[in-house]
Amino acid sequence: MKRVFAIVLSLIIIVSACVCASAANIDRTVTGEKVVITDGDWAYTKVSNYGYQIDSYLGSAANVTIPLSFAREYVTSIGDFAFNENSTLTTLTTTGRIESIGSYAFNGCTSLKTVKLYDSLTTLGVGCFYGDSALKSVNLSDTSISAVSPYCFAECGIPTMRLPDTCQSIGHYAFLNCSELLRIDIPASVTEIDDTAFNGCDKLIIVCPEGSTAAQYAEAKGIDYITNENLLMGDVNGDNKVNIRDVTFIQLYRVGLYDLVDNKAFLRSDVDRNGVVNIRDATNIQLHLVELIPDLNNI
Image (tube, rainbow, N blue to C red; front, top):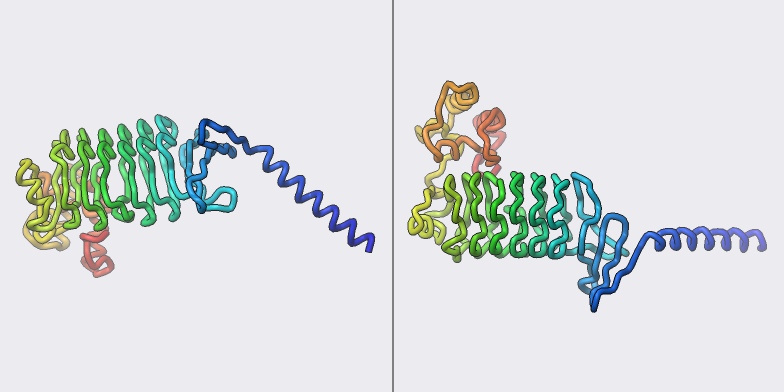
């Protein structure tokens, strides 16, 4: 019995020591009514009875994944200015528990190139990715956002964007001076677009349903657009067919022996929507021709 008691006591001491060691790495700072809990590279605040918010990121890693949980509760949001002007961040991966990203959360992250989001996300704050000039890939179509907030992607380097069917509005200056933005897919669910939403997007083509708010907006603003009904992805040479000739034309284009005559030709050729026409697009067309990719519009 004494031996059992000794073993149990030893286990209690070990567990207590681990807890104390862990607690020693956690700092709590009280500012007014706000309690910030620092644990390693992360600072958290409690936002509800069931979750924590990232208050700020204190590390310097290039590739960052948002923690799934803290203190046995899910991390459900990223707060205002959480990564503000972080110049080392290049890749951000969120989790399927993140529901909102605060205002200017990634403002001025000039090295940020890729952001991975999930369908749990419903809210993007004002100026969320403002000034992220290196940003090339954001899978916004996989989210459940209801709006693109004002200044959300202002002065970003994104070449293409597809909005989800949950989106209903695009705010003022949402894509201000996105000079590399070649294409944005806007679904019929979007019924409000601010007059200034695409100011400075000189290369832009809008892809949208016929008769939609986006189509009417494009006509009123003099922005080039094409309807989903008239867009044949993979039709490189514009003959209203997708065949092996289109693969050849991409190969010739890559070595400077074929010219994509206008922005719409480039749009039809860029089947993976990454802003570059390359051998991957040719491969996708080939896979489509052998029926391994049924619809090039849904890559």
